[in-house]
Length: 207
Image 1 (cartoon, rainbow, N blue to C red):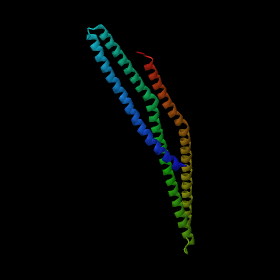
Image 2: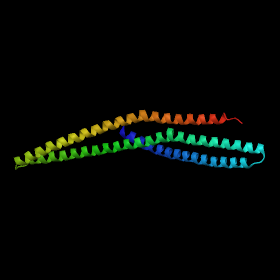
Image 3: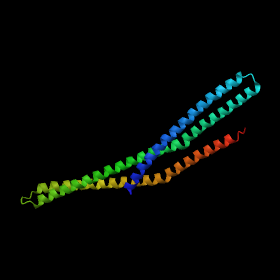
Image 4: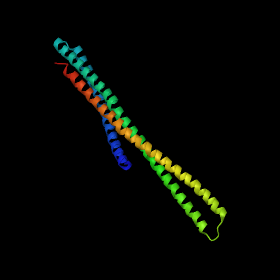
């Protein structure tokens, strides 16, 4: 279960990071385009103001206003992309990073538990060798028995921590799959809705 989920998370993280860069590039392009459109609108507006021919001047001014509106739409769309997609994707990346930290904590807890079990096994073997020795020393057996009891406690505590971390990780994975998938879908839907509204607004301008 955990091996499969870790592989899936690694793949998703790579995909989200790629998408994050793509969205960043898209937002940057929209802003740059908006700036270029404003420069064009300003130039056309200045040309219209200097034009002596009234129809030509009016046409130039109308074109400048249209370009300014298009600039506003691109800036608005860039803000929408930032809120609806970039923010959601960035949150996904950060949450996946937190879950991977939980994976690392689980692995560390497992190795600590296994090391405690190995130490316990070695100490038990050492005590048994003392018991089987021809020269039995009760003091060594007593000390060894106390050490075995202490190592047993350490092993049990390490096992408890491993089980606890595993349970927390499983809960985080279930929560992520349920909530974050819904958040991402909502972000994409909001972005598409914003783009459709923008296109509709442009189409309603008319000639």
